[in-house]
Image (cartoon, rainbow, N blue to C red; front, side, top):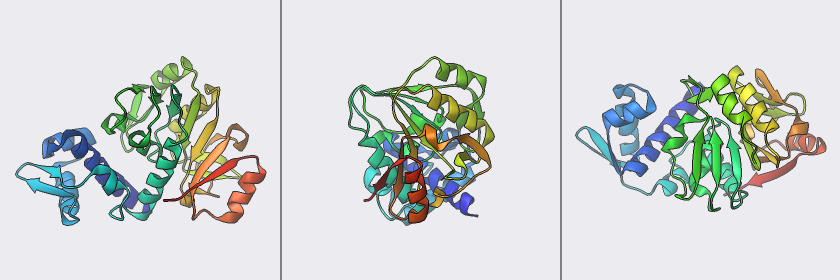
Length: 258
C-alpha cells in the first residue's frame, strides 16, 4: 500500500512537471508521456484541481501555481516532500562543469530544477528525466536500454555500454535501502548492475540519496558496499542509531532540512 501511494504521488508530480514545461497540455499528451490510461490521468487531474494546483478545461489542463512552490508545499505527501528537500540539498553540492551519473531514483530525478552550477552534463538511466526543467546550458544524456515500465528506468546491455564509455566527476545514487548490514540495496534487480557500473566509472565522490524511511533498511537486491560510498544525504527524521553505524563505517552524512 505504501509503495502504491508513493507511485501515485510521483505520477501526480510528473503531471505538474509536464504542465510546467508545456504551460498547457491535453489529456492525450499527458497519457502518452506517462504511459498510463486516460482514466488515470483524469483522476489525477481531478485531485490536483481540488487542491487548487491546476485549472481543467475541456480535454486538458494548465497550472495555476509555480511548479517549485507546489513541489515544496504540503500538497506533496510527506515522503515526496522529504525527497524534494534532499534533492534541493544535493543540487547545491554540484559544481560548474561537473559530469554526473544519476540513476533512476525518484529522489535524484528531482534534482535538475535546483541546480545552479553552469555547464553540467548528466548521464542518467531515468527516461523521465526529459520531463524535468533544467538549466539551458546543461546537457542531458540518456543511456538507452530496456525500459522497466513501472519506473521508466533504462537497464540492460545498451545502458551499460554507454556508462562504460564515460568517466564522471560525481555519482548520485538513490536507493531502496542503506544499512550497515546490507550496504546499499535496491528493490529492482536489473538496476543493481547499473548502479554498480555508475559507481565504478566515477573518479570523484559517490553520493547516496535516501529519505529516512530507507535508513537501516535492507532490500531485496545488493548494489554496492558502504566502502564504495562517500556521502549520504538524508532528512532529519532518520534514525540516529542507524546514522551512527553508517558514520562509523566511514560515510559523511548530510542532513537536509527545509
